[in-house]
Length: 372
Image 1 (cartoon, helix red, strand yellow):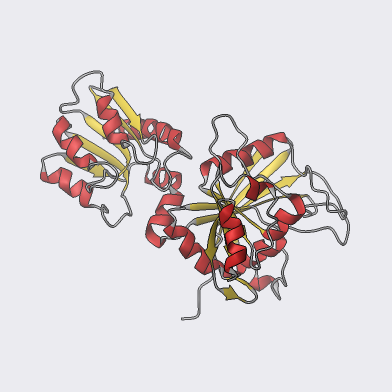
Image 2 (image 1 turned 90 degrees about the vertical axis):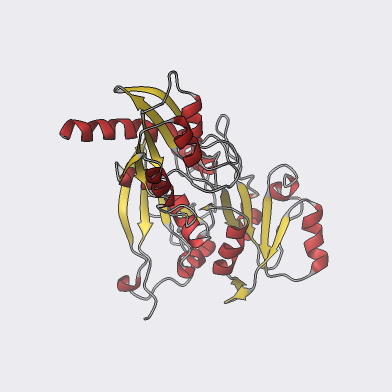
């Protein structure tokens, strides 16, 4: 029994390794990997390679070097049993003659959620689940959140010095961190669907917000611009014809909106809340655009608003071993702040990664309970 358990974990690890190859290419679908095992050997493997194309199970079956009849399929997420962009994977598994299916995590999608495994059992296939479940869920934390809330998973990211500054008192911020940390940030621009900043960052830095790694995918760019002040000659607007760009605004001036539409920007109207666009309402609208995740690279004002509105799921803090000093130097989160340490936004389950001389701390945001 112990040997059987070890084999299940070994083959599920193989499925997890290949699942991650779909990173940045399958959103808003999950990353999924599958391996087919017969007589203790992997005879076929596959992963979900691109949104709208074949799922991992079908790719694994197609890649089999010998007949998968009576073989075991290891898959990181429960096989789908409904028609979407592709036919149900359960149908392909049944047709292949596979005799056993080992599932890492159940699919939270209400269209599946246990129904895929039940359909396989009804056709005489042995099904077990929960093998390396935490690892399989962690791989798709974005998908699990998005499919159950219909709003994007938000990662607030910033780089600061050891004394908590994101720029010198002069405003200069290039570069706080080293090359390894910056490359990691670009990998995340490839991984997540969109990157979001505030209009002040556009005016001050004129960023391009592209992904600068080999074969990387540029994220959709979102600018929070309450009064439509984004310069029409900014890099973001000038390249909107090539890279999808969204301007979220409370400005109802149709003539001004047309200026941006004429530059191929998508303008999304969002109501005001406390003098700024309502970020909670924006997340609902962004979710309807099938954007499952946002890398928030804003300044202190937007970061504070995002935390206060409760839209932040995770915080990425890049820390450089430097001290800038300066009473007027900017910190990563501005706004009025909380009135006491007890009212702080608490971060949990932190993980630390060293990137040359810099450090990355990734933490989940412990969501505050609303009254009642």
